[in-house]
Image (cartoon, helix red, strand yellow):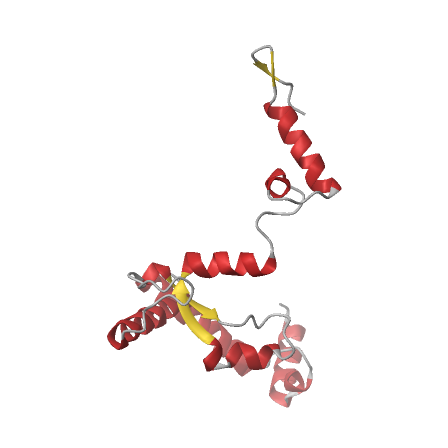
Length: 171
């Protein structure tokens, strides 16, 4: 940066010009940003994982402990106890996505339940009807008969078909 650029930059920052420009950070914002980045790096180094990840794990541990103490660590889907923290999942009883009022349904505490992660994932797949990626032989095996899934199934069968004890040529 040459002398003219430094002086014009100083004039813009001291005059408040940067604060008037949309999308540009003024000096104090840039300084805070650099400080928070350095602080976050220091936290990540000491924790061994990013600070945000550590904070979320801590919140989940606190939640799991409170659920156990209150006896509410029961899966909404299967009714069995949730025994370890890795299985804990927060679930919406009624799906909020694509509902009439998604924001309201998302934050409604009466719409929140807890379940095993596996139970929550399988319930979500059952509701959406998606069991495998579209255009795959797995989807064909589960009943989809569109052209993409049919072709994927044909290709897989031809790859695994054996001719006189040898595998068919790969595409």
